[in-house]
Length: 48
Image (cartoon, rainbow, N blue to C red; front, top):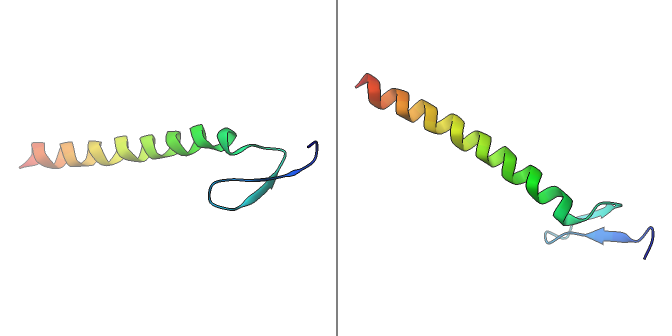
């Protein structure tokens, strides 16, 4: 299957990269957003 089209769980097609290769990147991005929002909420609570 060299050069075959790869489809991820969402049905999108990509060549050369597996869906597993994208999973850690997505999780990392979500974690950073989470930490950012937690910081804002924590600051707001301290100000009250």
